Image 1 (cartoon, rainbow, N blue to C red):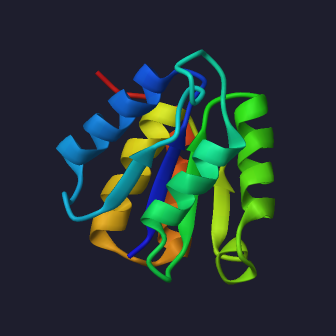
Image 2: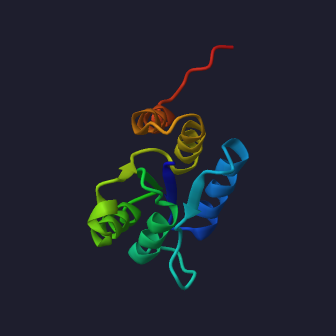
Length: 132
C-alpha cells in the first residue's frame, strides 16, 4: 500500500489535510502529518519528515505532498537520510497541499498504481472550468 506524508510549515495545516484525506479516502491508508517543527514552531524539519516516511513505508512507494520552499528542501534531505531500500521508493509530488493530498489519497484508495497516483496529483493542479 502506498504511503502518504503531508508536509506543511504549519502543523495545523498538515494535520487538517490528513483529516480531510481520511474523510474522503480509505481509512486503512497510511497517511501522516509531518508539519511544523519538533518544538511546535512554524517551519519544517527533515527528521520529522524522515520519521513520517518510515511510519508509512510498507514496501511500496511513499509520496510526499509539501507546501512551499523549504518543505521541499527538507523533504529532499529526509529522503537522503533514508536507508537505500526506501530511498528509491519516495517521490515528492508537485501538487497543491490540500487538493493534491485529497486527490492522491482518494486515488490510492482505488489503485496502488504509482502512475495513477502521480496523475491524480497532476490533475489536482489543473484549473477546471465549470459550465453553468
